[in-house]
Length: 262
Length: 290
Figure 1 (cartoon, each protein chain N blue to C red):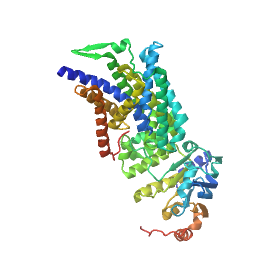
Figure 2: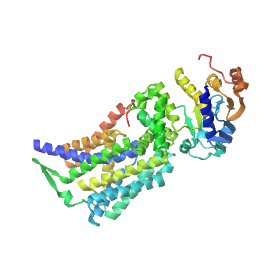
Figure 3: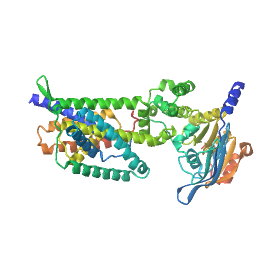
Figure 4: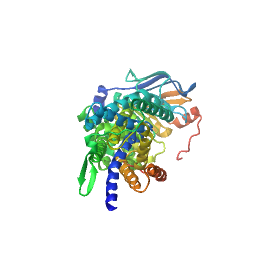
């Protein structure tokens, strides 16, 4: 990291420091079948916090509760100290919370330009900021310039991923929830998402990552939580997990991990 | 004979624009709003009766009446959406369908009660005027309705493409989940879509009253015609909706040359059947512009 980026980082952080946490959260899809049970988690600014666990443990559910797509039956969600447990999902982006879900969420029948306009829709009240956000996205992702009048659905997988990331960052959210960026995409696209997350960390963003790929997630993690059957298991700074992450996780979670190159 | 055919084609074209207008409302509620509005036909006929009242009781100019109907129907759409539909959407499509069916029954009964079940027609100086174009006599009101229909379609098209709200509507129609992630208020957008759909039913009601006799029992005919137009034109494209109306209008009017009046609706059902078969075979996998 260069000195200049450190100084901008400090400047940014003094302006807005956000952390997101959930405390004592219970949630269920069906009555009496808790998907999360007394679950606690906190992610801090300038860090990548990773949530690991076997399939069906409740990782993506936790992200859904944090974003308001699923209600918490009990417990609390706070963003930068403010309680947002009952805040509607579409109001959370204005609060600086953004979600990158695992399924593709572009508007396929609309142009790249229109996708970006919609991603910046909450800024429309401030015409200058709205334009600046979209121009900034084209500045940062030059490849999108030549594609601006193409339908999002006609782009290649890599281009779509870049458009998703560009759209996600238009409102300059403080807290980013990233769900399974490795799931079902080509390896080079996984790198695009991981590079972006490391870039966001440098800019002081709060990142909470859920990924099946324990090695990849572990390699960028600052802090790790583990979850099993909707409950907290071990957690701690990533340094405590160094070198033995794979063995530890397989032992705690009793899951059969895919071979190294599988 | 050639003269008759040309006359019929022109008449079919102009009536077809009106058919297209009946489909525009359904394109909104069904294509963009994902709500099968079975009350569409009833609302169209209600619009016709309101225009009749405004014209005969209050001696209002039909074009002014049209503006009143647009506003009133927009409000009605907002009311129906917020009171009945908003809470039901998350539950099941069947319940929404049944509720709208109930709404249709209630409105039809009220219309029959207020206006009796007789067939009526609106007669104004405008509806009786004709214009001479070369050797052809064309009803002036048909031209007016066609002009309004085309203007409404192009207006809506520009609205959906150019305005922020229009883009929100298209985005919400494609993916409500993605729209919510962009911070768009999906519930509000759905209400706007329904308001526009119902206002468009009102505009179609104006067109119906200007062109044809009508009765409270006509609701099914107009629901089916708007449904055929939407199936033929594709649920999310305004241009093809209007074009589909024109195709249907021309086919039906041409058939009128040979078929008895009572059998003319056969053409509508035949087109519906063919359109459904065609649509099911060409289920599009490509990404189309919306």
